[in-house]
Amino acid sequence: MTYLKPLFRHPKLPKNKLGYTLKEYEGTISTLCAGCGHDSISATIVQACFELSIEPHLVAKISGIGCSSKTPAYFLGNSHGFNSVHGRMPSVATGANLANKNMVYFGVSGDGDTASIGMGQFVHVIRKNLNMVYIVMNNGCYGLTKGQDSATADVGSASKSGHINPFQPVDLASLAVELGATFVAQSFSGDKQQLVPLIKAAIQHKGLAFINVMSPCVTFNNNPGSTKSYDYVREHMQATGTLDFVPEREAIKAEYAAGTDTAVSLHDGTVMRLHKLAPEWNPEDRLSAVNAMQQARAKNEILTGLLYINTEFGDLHDILNTSDGAFNTLGEKALCPGEEQLQAINASLR
Image 1 (cartoon, rainbow, N blue to C red):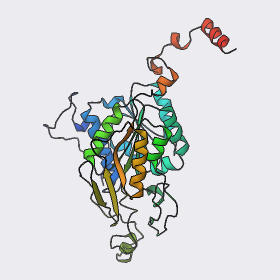
Image 2: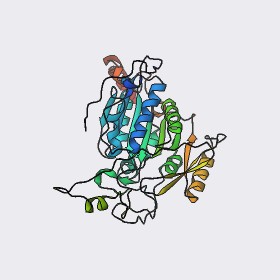
Image 3: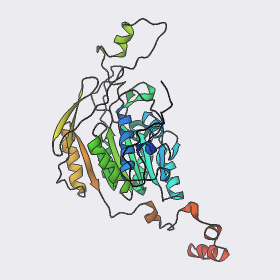
Image 4: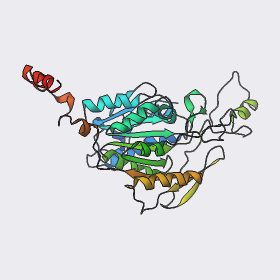
């Protein structure tokens, strides 16, 4: 495998309003498993930023730890990036956003990074309504540590080891609505037609825009007994040493009309049922969003689309009444206004 991406692009590639092609929004070559849904999400972020004509150097990508948190390297290579501590992406993004509110922020996380170790930070970044696109690449397992069930794994689902998950899953989209998130959406990594507009809308939303994206794992959703499983391959191959073989898979895609259902077959033969919201759906009705998600869950469906939006609630800078300019542009005079101002502040606190 090469990690060098060819510089050549077709000279007649379409350009956006800035005169850029998709090349200016790409990153390095992905090292994720072939066919991983996370790569499809990266591609939709590239497409969304290209279509909105966003300057790549005005974007900041913050991530935690996990397969999903590796993906910022694979899109917007000319932007700023910070790979933080496991589950702590929201607090790092908050600090960056407070210092410079004039950038577009992407918080990239996974179901383990958000629904387990990062749950507390997830709750509070919603409460503060940080102006950021928060994307969870949700595959229900811990891909970097050999496929254990994550907190979003469905009850009764079987892991690679054959362990049956006895616990109810954490429904991140429903939880986000309950916690007061001002933009909540849900999608499938293979539905580019739906996901690109959702990301574009999330970028333009003032406040926290949360998107929970179902992203199949091609490596840890294989069944024992399958001719594509690791055990079968090891038993039917001769090698000089013990190797892990990851079969190359095609990325799973799904195209279906709004207001309809579709059944998506995963690499292991199991089926995920998706339901796309109808065009007349009112995303400003919070109670309706909660009810619709619960009804879909009762039917073992995953509701996709823009579930809820609130444009009236201000973001963190509005709540704190911060300065009009970014903090990192303030000079000494603004930061050190003098003894008189200090005495006035102290007096107001007595």
